[in-house]
Image (cartoon, rainbow, N blue to C red):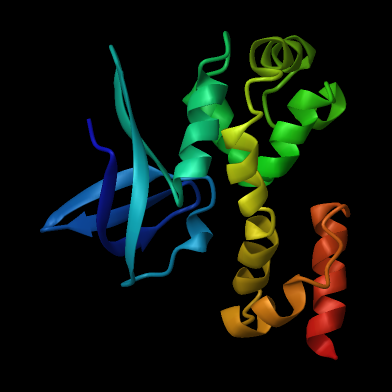
Length: 185
């Protein structure tokens, strides 16, 4: 089992990246492939999915994403292919908050997550994302906003200057709008 793979990104597709490590190209399914840049060095934390008809690697930019993914796939009826889009379109904090607040509507917005699976997620994970896990989640509060702004072409240094002035209680769409207003000043 691989804990992580470090190497250079050689290819970026809509749902995976290929990372070169010592001449071997690993195809890794990731929540947001466009977070990565070609020919740059990254460490991707991985989960190996080995089944009768499949051998796949799922990768994450940090351990906190990997830990949430592992908790999500422990839910009955929720496999890696359903959990990955949840991390792609939702923030770690948003998902954890929705589970703790029993917000079924938030969970149902993800692809292939219906009422039954959303209720099962809440049943299996409510209260299990507290303590150390939640403090780790809080430390990544602005990751999604930062990734979105980087994807729009803004520099990390400029983002760091304004991100503390963006209200974290807003939806991600409104956070981006507020951040863009601050960046354009």
